[in-house]
Length: 198
Image 1 (tube, rainbow, N blue to C red):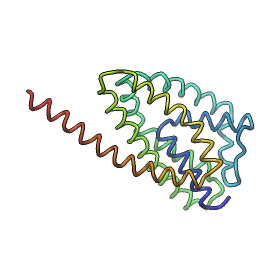
Image 2 (image 1 turned 60 degrees about the horizontal axis):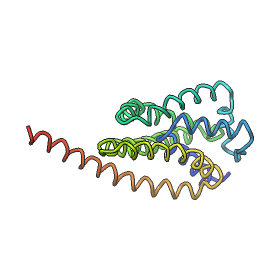
Image 3 (image 1 turned 135 degrees about the vertical axis):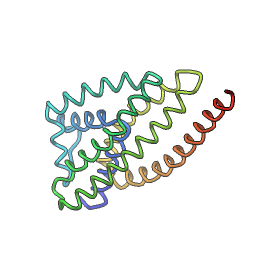
Image 4 (image 1 turned 30 degrees about the horizontal axis):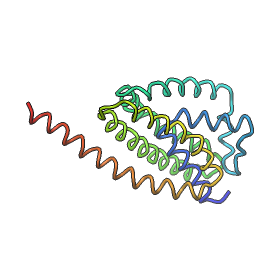
């Protein structure tokens, strides 16, 4: 597999892991185990995700996240906890995927992909904080289901069309930068308004 293809697949999977780590691992593992997905050369390290022990842990964690993510404010607490878990998980996923690479390059890419996961996680968490302050509960649940549905589609795109995935992730990273800034401004206004009322 060419370098751009490897990079696109690894960055795409890292981006997804920043949003839904356990769902990404579970979707990849199940797809490989049941031969729904054939890994390209250079990504064979991901075959370890098809192991029943990995699938069991990922499945249990996915179920916990699935329900936690549907409850306003619980989802934000879950995201806060996973600020430390998702980027590390994405870096480990990248290191496993790129096992045939030069160790120094693999380490550099793992750090880069951990950063991409942190960015996608930050965008998700910032969006959820804003949505949790909306007066109705349905937008939170709809957003959560949309994230659930995005994982299998994203896994397929990252493995089947890595160059397109790389372009999509670059665009999404730009949008996330703007959304995190907007969320920060909105929270500052909200908290300054509460302080002024006191």
